[in-house]
Length: 422
Image 1 (cartoon, one colour):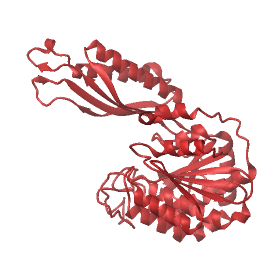
Image 2 (cartoon, one colour):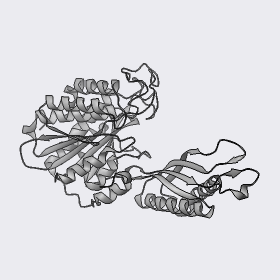
Image 3 (cartoon, one colour):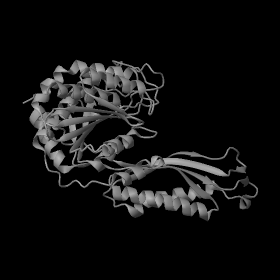
Image 4 (cartoon, one colour):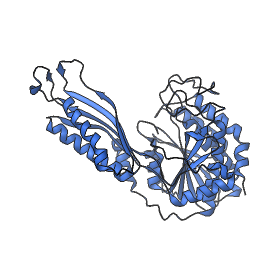
Protein backbone atom coordinates (compact mmCIF):
# COMPACT_ATOMS: atom_id res chain seq x y z
CA UNK A 1 0.00 0.00 0.00
CA UNK A 2 1.44 3.34 -1.04
CA UNK A 3 1.97 5.95 1.69
CA UNK A 4 0.78 9.13 0.00
CA UNK A 5 2.05 11.28 2.86
CA UNK A 6 5.59 9.94 2.40
CA UNK A 7 5.45 10.11 -1.39
CA UNK A 8 4.23 13.72 -1.36
CA UNK A 9 6.88 14.72 1.17
CA UNK A 10 9.60 12.99 -0.85
CA UNK A 11 8.62 14.99 -3.93
CA UNK A 12 8.37 18.35 -2.13
CA UNK A 13 11.38 19.65 -4.03
CA UNK A 14 9.64 18.76 -7.31
CA UNK A 15 6.42 20.51 -6.30
CA UNK A 16 8.20 23.65 -5.11
CA UNK A 17 10.43 23.87 -8.19
CA UNK A 18 7.46 23.47 -10.52
CA UNK A 19 5.39 26.05 -8.70
CA UNK A 20 8.22 28.59 -8.71
CA UNK A 21 8.89 28.11 -12.40
CA UNK A 22 5.24 28.66 -13.29
CA UNK A 23 5.03 31.65 -10.95
CA UNK A 24 8.08 33.28 -12.53
CA UNK A 25 6.75 32.86 -16.07
CA UNK A 26 2.98 33.45 -16.00
CA UNK A 27 0.99 33.77 -19.21
CA UNK A 28 -2.46 35.20 -19.85
CA UNK A 29 -5.48 33.25 -21.08
CA UNK A 30 -5.06 31.83 -24.60
CA UNK A 31 -1.37 32.82 -24.53
CA UNK A 32 -0.08 29.92 -22.40
CA UNK A 33 2.18 28.47 -25.10
CA UNK A 34 5.44 28.39 -23.13
CA UNK A 35 3.52 27.08 -20.13
CA UNK A 36 2.14 24.17 -22.15
CA UNK A 37 5.57 23.48 -23.66
CA UNK A 38 7.02 23.22 -20.16
CA UNK A 39 4.16 21.00 -18.95
CA UNK A 40 4.68 18.61 -21.86
CA UNK A 41 8.46 18.65 -21.42
CA UNK A 42 8.12 17.60 -17.77
CA UNK A 43 5.56 14.90 -18.59
CA UNK A 44 7.66 13.51 -21.43
CA UNK A 45 10.68 13.36 -19.12
CA UNK A 46 8.65 10.93 -17.02
CA UNK A 47 7.58 8.96 -20.13
CA UNK A 48 4.00 10.19 -19.92
CA UNK A 49 2.38 10.70 -23.35
CA UNK A 50 0.49 13.90 -24.10
CA UNK A 51 -1.89 15.43 -26.63
CA UNK A 52 -2.11 19.18 -27.32
CA UNK A 53 -5.74 20.15 -27.95
CA UNK A 54 -6.04 23.39 -29.95
CA UNK A 55 -7.51 26.20 -27.84
CA UNK A 56 -8.05 23.69 -25.07
CA UNK A 57 -4.83 22.66 -23.39
CA UNK A 58 -2.84 19.50 -22.70
CA UNK A 59 -4.12 16.00 -22.02
CA UNK A 60 -1.76 13.44 -20.46
CA UNK A 61 -2.41 9.79 -19.68
CA UNK A 62 -0.81 7.74 -16.93
CA UNK A 63 -1.75 4.11 -17.59
CA UNK A 64 -1.06 1.28 -15.17
CA UNK A 65 -1.32 -1.24 -18.00
CA UNK A 66 -4.05 -3.03 -16.07
CA UNK A 67 -7.81 -2.75 -16.58
CA UNK A 68 -9.80 -0.65 -14.18
CA UNK A 69 -11.40 2.73 -13.64
CA UNK A 70 -10.34 5.94 -15.36
CA UNK A 71 -10.02 9.00 -13.12
CA UNK A 72 -9.72 12.51 -14.55
CA UNK A 73 -7.52 15.08 -12.81
CA UNK A 74 -7.77 18.71 -13.89
CA UNK A 75 -5.47 21.71 -13.44
CA UNK A 76 -5.92 25.21 -14.91
CA UNK A 77 -2.90 27.05 -16.25
CA UNK A 78 -3.55 30.75 -17.02
CA UNK A 79 -2.55 33.82 -15.05
CA UNK A 80 -4.06 37.28 -14.54
CA UNK A 81 -3.26 40.80 -15.73
CA UNK A 82 -2.17 42.00 -12.28
CA UNK A 83 1.06 43.78 -11.34
CA UNK A 84 2.55 41.75 -8.50
CA UNK A 85 3.78 43.23 -5.22
CA UNK A 86 7.05 41.83 -3.91
CA UNK A 87 5.56 41.39 -0.44
CA UNK A 88 2.57 39.42 0.78
CA UNK A 89 0.70 40.13 4.02
CA UNK A 90 3.83 40.26 6.19
CA UNK A 91 6.97 39.20 4.33
CA UNK A 92 8.92 39.31 1.10
CA UNK A 93 7.69 36.69 -1.34
CA UNK A 94 9.86 33.66 -2.11
CA UNK A 95 9.31 34.04 -5.86
CA UNK A 96 8.08 36.83 -8.12
CA UNK A 97 6.71 37.07 -11.64
CA UNK A 98 9.28 37.99 -14.28
CA UNK A 99 6.55 38.92 -16.78
CA UNK A 100 5.61 42.50 -15.99
CA UNK A 101 1.94 43.10 -15.40
CA UNK A 102 1.10 39.38 -15.29
CA UNK A 103 0.77 37.31 -12.13
CA UNK A 104 -0.45 33.95 -10.92
CA UNK A 105 -2.76 35.69 -8.47
CA UNK A 106 -5.29 32.88 -8.27
CA UNK A 107 -3.03 29.93 -7.52
CA UNK A 108 -3.00 28.18 -10.88
CA UNK A 109 0.78 27.85 -10.54
CA UNK A 110 0.08 25.70 -7.50
CA UNK A 111 -2.59 23.70 -9.34
CA UNK A 112 -0.15 22.84 -12.13
CA UNK A 113 2.63 21.97 -9.70
CA UNK A 114 0.41 19.62 -7.70
CA UNK A 115 -1.02 17.87 -10.76
CA UNK A 116 2.39 17.33 -12.34
CA UNK A 117 3.80 15.96 -9.09
CA UNK A 118 0.84 13.59 -8.82
CA UNK A 119 1.43 12.42 -12.39
CA UNK A 120 5.11 11.82 -11.66
CA UNK A 121 4.36 9.79 -8.53
CA UNK A 122 1.62 7.71 -10.14
CA UNK A 123 3.76 6.94 -13.19
CA UNK A 124 6.60 5.75 -10.95
CA UNK A 125 4.31 3.34 -9.04
CA UNK A 126 2.06 1.78 -11.70
CA UNK A 127 2.60 -1.61 -10.09
CA UNK A 128 0.61 -0.44 -7.05
CA UNK A 129 -2.67 0.50 -8.74
CA UNK A 130 -5.01 -0.49 -11.57
CA UNK A 131 -6.66 1.56 -14.29
CA UNK A 132 -5.52 4.90 -15.66
CA UNK A 133 -5.42 8.55 -14.71
CA UNK A 134 -5.99 11.28 -17.29
CA UNK A 135 -4.59 14.71 -16.49
CA UNK A 136 -5.97 17.75 -18.28
CA UNK A 137 -4.26 21.14 -18.15
CA UNK A 138 -6.87 23.71 -19.08
CA UNK A 139 -6.22 26.92 -20.97
CA UNK A 140 -8.06 30.17 -20.30
CA UNK A 141 -9.97 29.26 -17.15
CA UNK A 142 -10.13 32.92 -16.18
CA UNK A 143 -11.29 34.70 -19.35
CA UNK A 144 -11.63 34.41 -23.10
CA UNK A 145 -12.53 31.34 -25.13
CA UNK A 146 -12.41 28.94 -22.22
CA UNK A 147 -10.35 25.84 -22.86
CA UNK A 148 -12.52 23.37 -21.01
CA UNK A 149 -15.04 23.28 -23.89
CA UNK A 150 -12.44 21.99 -26.36
CA UNK A 151 -11.04 19.50 -23.84
CA UNK A 152 -14.43 18.00 -23.03
CA UNK A 153 -15.35 17.76 -26.70
CA UNK A 154 -12.04 16.02 -27.39
CA UNK A 155 -12.69 13.43 -24.68
CA UNK A 156 -16.22 12.84 -25.96
CA UNK A 157 -15.27 12.69 -29.63
CA UNK A 158 -12.45 10.24 -28.90
CA UNK A 159 -14.73 8.06 -26.76
CA UNK A 160 -12.63 8.52 -23.62
CA UNK A 161 -14.71 7.14 -20.77
CA UNK A 162 -14.30 8.85 -17.39
CA UNK A 163 -15.51 7.14 -14.22
CA UNK A 164 -14.73 9.96 -11.77
CA UNK A 165 -13.15 13.40 -11.89
CA UNK A 166 -11.04 15.28 -9.36
CA UNK A 167 -10.11 18.94 -9.14
CA UNK A 168 -8.84 21.31 -6.53
CA UNK A 169 -8.64 25.02 -5.92
CA UNK A 170 -6.21 26.52 -3.45
CA UNK A 171 -8.11 28.62 -0.90
CA UNK A 172 -6.66 31.76 0.64
CA UNK A 173 -8.55 31.52 3.93
CA UNK A 174 -8.02 27.79 4.57
CA UNK A 175 -4.91 26.97 6.66
CA UNK A 176 -2.03 25.20 4.94
CA UNK A 177 -2.17 21.47 5.58
CA UNK A 178 -5.96 21.45 5.61
CA UNK A 179 -8.27 20.09 2.93
CA UNK A 180 -11.90 21.12 2.50
CA UNK A 181 -14.28 18.60 0.88
CA UNK A 182 -17.87 19.81 0.86
CA UNK A 183 -21.12 17.99 0.31
CA UNK A 184 -23.30 19.61 -2.32
CA UNK A 185 -22.41 23.08 -3.55
CA UNK A 186 -18.68 23.81 -3.36
CA UNK A 187 -18.52 26.96 -5.51
CA UNK A 188 -21.11 29.28 -6.95
CA UNK A 189 -22.63 29.26 -10.39
CA UNK A 190 -22.13 32.45 -12.38
CA UNK A 191 -23.81 34.35 -15.18
CA UNK A 192 -21.52 36.76 -17.03
CA UNK A 193 -23.42 39.39 -18.99
CA UNK A 194 -22.65 42.37 -21.19
CA UNK A 195 -25.34 44.38 -22.93
CA UNK A 196 -25.31 47.30 -25.35
CA UNK A 197 -28.44 49.44 -25.42
CA UNK A 198 -29.03 51.23 -28.71
CA UNK A 199 -31.20 54.35 -28.63
CA UNK A 200 -31.43 57.67 -30.40
CA UNK A 201 -29.29 60.55 -29.18
CA UNK A 202 -30.37 64.13 -28.68
CA UNK A 203 -29.93 67.38 -26.78
CA UNK A 204 -30.69 68.05 -23.14
CA UNK A 205 -33.06 70.86 -24.09
CA UNK A 206 -35.36 68.39 -25.92
CA UNK A 207 -35.16 64.97 -24.24
CA UNK A 208 -38.59 64.21 -25.71
CA UNK A 209 -36.95 64.00 -29.14
CA UNK A 210 -34.39 61.37 -28.00
CA UNK A 211 -34.64 57.70 -27.09
CA UNK A 212 -32.30 57.64 -24.11
CA UNK A 213 -30.51 54.36 -23.38
CA UNK A 214 -29.58 55.83 -20.00
CA UNK A 215 -33.23 55.99 -18.96
CA UNK A 216 -33.72 52.42 -20.19
CA UNK A 217 -30.72 51.26 -18.15
CA UNK A 218 -32.04 52.93 -15.00
CA UNK A 219 -35.29 50.98 -15.32
CA UNK A 220 -33.45 47.73 -16.04
CA UNK A 221 -31.29 48.22 -12.95
CA UNK A 222 -34.37 48.91 -10.85
CA UNK A 223 -36.05 45.67 -11.92
CA UNK A 224 -32.90 43.64 -11.31
CA UNK A 225 -32.57 45.09 -7.83
CA UNK A 226 -36.11 44.00 -6.98
CA UNK A 227 -35.74 40.52 -8.49
CA UNK A 228 -33.70 38.98 -5.65
CA UNK A 229 -36.37 39.78 -3.05
CA UNK A 230 -39.25 38.63 -5.23
CA UNK A 231 -37.94 35.42 -6.74
CA UNK A 232 -35.25 33.82 -4.56
CA UNK A 233 -36.07 32.06 -1.25
CA UNK A 234 -34.31 33.81 1.66
CA UNK A 235 -32.43 30.66 2.65
CA UNK A 236 -30.81 30.46 -0.80
CA UNK A 237 -28.04 32.68 -2.15
CA UNK A 238 -28.18 34.75 -5.31
CA UNK A 239 -26.39 38.03 -5.82
CA UNK A 240 -25.53 40.20 -8.79
CA UNK A 241 -23.44 43.26 -9.51
CA UNK A 242 -22.89 45.71 -12.34
CA UNK A 243 -19.16 46.11 -12.85
CA UNK A 244 -19.09 48.76 -15.55
CA UNK A 245 -21.39 51.25 -17.26
CA UNK A 246 -20.32 53.39 -20.21
CA UNK A 247 -22.35 56.10 -21.92
CA UNK A 248 -22.05 59.69 -22.99
CA UNK A 249 -19.36 62.33 -22.65
CA UNK A 250 -21.17 65.71 -22.33
CA UNK A 251 -23.70 66.86 -19.72
CA UNK A 252 -26.11 68.28 -22.28
CA UNK A 253 -25.87 65.53 -24.90
CA UNK A 254 -28.06 62.43 -24.67
CA UNK A 255 -26.03 59.51 -26.04
CA UNK A 256 -27.30 57.03 -28.57
CA UNK A 257 -25.66 54.03 -26.88
CA UNK A 258 -24.98 52.68 -23.41
CA UNK A 259 -23.10 49.52 -22.52
CA UNK A 260 -23.07 47.73 -19.17
CA UNK A 261 -21.67 44.47 -17.86
CA UNK A 262 -21.60 42.43 -14.69
CA UNK A 263 -22.09 39.03 -13.10
CA UNK A 264 -24.62 37.06 -11.11
CA UNK A 265 -23.64 34.40 -8.56
CA UNK A 266 -25.86 31.66 -7.16
CA UNK A 267 -25.77 28.45 -5.14
CA UNK A 268 -28.57 26.73 -7.04
CA UNK A 269 -28.71 26.28 -10.82
CA UNK A 270 -32.49 26.61 -10.98
CA UNK A 271 -32.23 30.07 -9.41
CA UNK A 272 -29.31 31.04 -11.61
CA UNK A 273 -30.94 29.97 -14.85
CA UNK A 274 -34.21 31.67 -13.86
CA UNK A 275 -32.28 34.91 -13.26
CA UNK A 276 -30.57 34.58 -16.65
CA UNK A 277 -33.90 34.15 -18.41
CA UNK A 278 -35.48 37.05 -16.50
CA UNK A 279 -32.46 39.26 -17.21
CA UNK A 280 -32.57 38.70 -20.96
CA UNK A 281 -36.35 39.10 -21.15
CA UNK A 282 -36.35 42.23 -18.97
CA UNK A 283 -33.54 43.89 -20.92
CA UNK A 284 -35.29 43.34 -24.25
CA UNK A 285 -38.72 44.40 -22.93
CA UNK A 286 -37.59 47.54 -21.13
CA UNK A 287 -35.34 48.61 -23.99
CA UNK A 288 -38.34 48.38 -26.33
CA UNK A 289 -40.50 50.38 -23.91
CA UNK A 290 -37.98 53.21 -24.14
CA UNK A 291 -37.68 53.01 -27.90
CA UNK A 292 -34.31 51.27 -27.71
CA UNK A 293 -32.97 47.83 -28.55
CA UNK A 294 -30.82 45.52 -26.44
CA UNK A 295 -27.81 43.74 -27.94
CA UNK A 296 -26.44 40.88 -25.79
CA UNK A 297 -22.67 41.05 -26.22
CA UNK A 298 -21.85 38.43 -23.57
CA UNK A 299 -24.12 35.69 -22.24
CA UNK A 300 -22.18 32.97 -20.41
CA UNK A 301 -23.49 30.69 -17.68
CA UNK A 302 -21.13 28.65 -15.51
CA UNK A 303 -22.94 25.96 -13.50
CA UNK A 304 -22.79 25.58 -9.74
CA UNK A 305 -19.83 23.41 -8.71
CA UNK A 306 -21.73 20.47 -7.24
CA UNK A 307 -19.81 17.64 -5.58
CA UNK A 308 -21.07 14.08 -5.96
CA UNK A 309 -22.19 12.69 -2.59
CA UNK A 310 -20.69 9.23 -2.99
CA UNK A 311 -17.32 10.64 -4.06
CA UNK A 312 -17.32 13.05 -1.11
CA UNK A 313 -17.93 10.08 1.19
CA UNK A 314 -14.99 8.27 -0.39
CA UNK A 315 -12.75 11.35 -0.46
CA UNK A 316 -13.26 12.31 3.17
CA UNK A 317 -12.57 8.79 4.33
CA UNK A 318 -9.51 8.46 2.08
CA UNK A 319 -7.94 11.75 3.20
CA UNK A 320 -8.47 11.05 6.89
CA UNK A 321 -7.23 7.48 6.52
CA UNK A 322 -4.10 8.55 4.66
CA UNK A 323 -3.25 11.88 6.29
CA UNK A 324 -5.05 11.87 9.64
CA UNK A 325 -8.11 13.57 11.15
CA UNK A 326 -6.35 16.94 11.27
CA UNK A 327 -5.95 17.01 7.49
CA UNK A 328 -9.69 17.49 6.92
CA UNK A 329 -11.39 20.78 7.75
CA UNK A 330 -15.00 19.86 8.57
CA UNK A 331 -16.10 23.51 8.73
CA UNK A 332 -14.70 24.73 5.40
CA UNK A 333 -17.34 27.04 3.86
CA UNK A 334 -18.52 27.06 0.28
CA UNK A 335 -17.05 29.75 -1.96
CA UNK A 336 -19.11 32.30 -3.88
CA UNK A 337 -16.47 32.46 -6.63
CA UNK A 338 -17.10 30.39 -9.76
CA UNK A 339 -15.04 27.62 -11.35
CA UNK A 340 -15.00 26.04 -14.80
CA UNK A 341 -14.44 22.67 -13.11
CA UNK A 342 -18.20 22.91 -12.59
CA UNK A 343 -18.63 22.19 -16.29
CA UNK A 344 -16.71 18.93 -15.83
CA UNK A 345 -19.02 18.12 -12.93
CA UNK A 346 -22.03 18.17 -15.25
CA UNK A 347 -20.42 15.49 -17.42
CA UNK A 348 -18.82 13.12 -14.88
CA UNK A 349 -19.22 12.24 -11.20
CA UNK A 350 -16.77 14.64 -9.61
CA UNK A 351 -15.36 16.11 -6.44
CA UNK A 352 -13.68 19.48 -5.97
CA UNK A 353 -11.27 19.82 -3.05
CA UNK A 354 -10.13 23.06 -1.43
CA UNK A 355 -6.39 23.04 -0.64
CA UNK A 356 -5.34 25.29 2.24
CA UNK A 357 -2.55 27.79 1.57
CA UNK A 358 -2.85 30.30 4.45
CA UNK A 359 0.26 30.43 6.64
CA UNK A 360 1.10 33.30 9.02
CA UNK A 361 4.80 32.44 9.00
CA UNK A 362 4.97 32.63 5.23
CA UNK A 363 2.68 35.66 5.09
CA UNK A 364 0.18 34.01 2.78
CA UNK A 365 -3.54 34.54 3.22
CA UNK A 366 -4.31 37.56 1.02
CA UNK A 367 -7.43 37.06 -1.11
CA UNK A 368 -7.16 35.76 -4.64
CA UNK A 369 -6.82 38.24 -7.52
CA UNK A 370 -4.84 40.73 -5.40
CA UNK A 371 -1.19 41.87 -5.84
CA UNK A 372 -0.37 40.55 -2.35
CA UNK A 373 -1.63 37.03 -3.05
CA UNK A 374 0.81 34.29 -2.08
CA UNK A 375 0.61 30.66 -1.06
CA UNK A 376 2.22 28.20 1.30
CA UNK A 377 4.27 25.66 -0.62
CA UNK A 378 3.88 23.25 2.30
CA UNK A 379 0.15 23.54 1.66
CA UNK A 380 0.74 22.32 -1.89
CA UNK A 381 2.61 19.27 -0.60
CA UNK A 382 -0.39 18.45 1.59
CA UNK A 383 -2.59 18.96 -1.46
CA UNK A 384 -0.59 16.38 -3.42
CA UNK A 385 -1.09 13.87 -0.62
CA UNK A 386 -4.84 14.54 -0.41
CA UNK A 387 -5.27 14.22 -4.19
CA UNK A 388 -3.35 10.94 -4.32
CA UNK A 389 -5.38 9.59 -1.40
CA UNK A 390 -8.59 10.19 -3.33
CA UNK A 391 -7.31 9.02 -6.72
CA UNK A 392 -5.94 5.74 -5.39
CA UNK A 393 -9.06 5.10 -3.29
CA UNK A 394 -11.33 5.71 -6.29
CA UNK A 395 -9.27 3.41 -8.53
CA UNK A 396 -9.34 0.69 -5.89
CA UNK A 397 -12.89 0.90 -4.57
CA UNK A 398 -14.74 1.95 -7.77
CA UNK A 399 -17.72 3.34 -5.83
CA UNK A 400 -21.18 3.44 -7.34
CA UNK A 401 -22.40 7.02 -7.87
CA UNK A 402 -26.20 6.72 -8.12
CA UNK A 403 -26.80 10.36 -7.13
CA UNK A 404 -25.03 11.60 -10.28
CA UNK A 405 -27.13 12.43 -13.31
CA UNK A 406 -25.15 13.52 -16.38
CA UNK A 407 -26.26 16.60 -18.29
CA UNK A 408 -26.21 16.82 -22.05
CA UNK A 409 -22.77 18.23 -22.88
CA UNK A 410 -23.89 20.26 -25.89
CA UNK A 411 -26.66 21.88 -23.84
CA UNK A 412 -24.27 22.85 -21.06
CA UNK A 413 -21.68 24.19 -23.49
CA UNK A 414 -24.34 26.15 -25.37
CA UNK A 415 -24.85 28.27 -22.23
CA UNK A 416 -21.23 28.17 -21.11
CA UNK A 417 -19.57 28.89 -24.45
CA UNK A 418 -22.25 30.43 -26.71
CA UNK A 419 -19.77 32.03 -29.12
CA UNK A 420 -18.19 28.67 -29.94
CA UNK A 421 -21.13 26.42 -30.72
CA UNK A 422 -20.28 23.14 -32.42
